Length: 526
Image 1 (cartoon, helix red, strand yellow):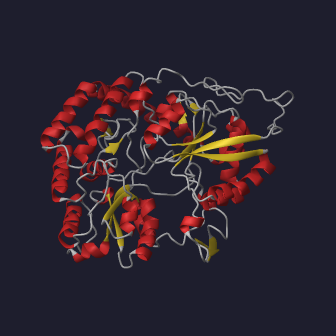
Image 2 (tube, rainbow, N blue to C red; image 1 turned 30 degrees about the horizontal axis):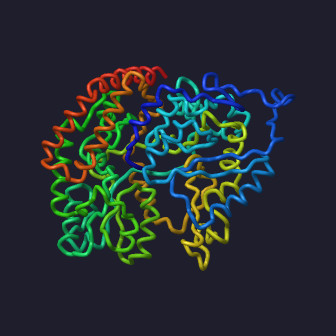
């Protein structure tokens, strides 16, 4: 969904400090629930006599029109009635979100519920540092419906050292594989009559914009987005990304699905040199602005306004953006070149792509899980949390969710960014979702391979300084290479490799391989 660029230097200073659980619900060693008030510990009933406020940390920019507060008022009427609590949302906004998120957890600030993910939001490193509370003893009592509906093999994918550290989003269908969005009408105008399936043809599309749309920037990206580096690797090789945190560029991959237990780095083969050369060419041709590394604009808004010809994100975003573009740029026929289109290299996402954890210093983890249970299992709360207030944010027409008459996004827009517990059974199809997405999903289902690393948890203890140093290198050098601003591309890649080696690349690869060997034994023993 996003690039990983973590503020590792500051984080490394607190790595040795274990965030242990305190008052109320459990401890990070046993995961056992602490006794409740006198007379309630063994009663089998949750004690809700004391009113509590439950915080839930979300990723995203908080809407500033007051609608979140209005929706929470309605949610909290139910929360008060059912569990004598109220829900309060806190936000880690997108500006420098990677650093802010990890520093929030490292700070020891008490948080109750928090969005997490193993493939893009550092769930495992944070669990290893003691930032999350083990939930094994708490879930059956305080979130019993959720506990029962998640299968044992799915809970296995949330465990570190045999303890559950997050609740997976296991019952929600989505595809978040990335790619470029581009205008189909313009592609046809430039003589590109077939769907774009490779970076080379994407370059031809960008050149068409340069030649025929002088007031349009082909792809008005900014240097914080390095997803296309990963995309180039996915489209040109069979490599599978591993959850090994190396900053701006993912350095460590599985070699292929057939050789998924073999650690490999495309950064150190010709693939990455080819990428650097192409990006230098694209930069020289002006496919993005000269100050791309400092630009902070919103490329999606520009695409909707006809000011740029491309955007980069995942399939789920495309499914709604296509309909929005049809309205804002009639006839644009927005298309998606997914990285997997080139050679069918598509891995199903893990169920921990969206997950929820309980902060280790939560003062009331029991009630936090009860609040989560209401969001996930109570239809009325689910609708409010995901869609807002019926009649204000949405109406239901012909079984689909549409905007009410007179709806104004600035005034009425609402989003909670709840990505850690959606379930298909409560989903209302959106009238703004493009009908053609079903064909894309069918195509993906025909080529996808199962996610092979659901239970692989990297133990960083022996290589943490090296990973930190490698992350600093990729964060310093990666953006310039990814946007053709590093001078000679061959030399730039050589320098990158040299600095990665000096940072401890060989030790990291050897240790990851050792752990993959152990993981293979675990998987094959089942």
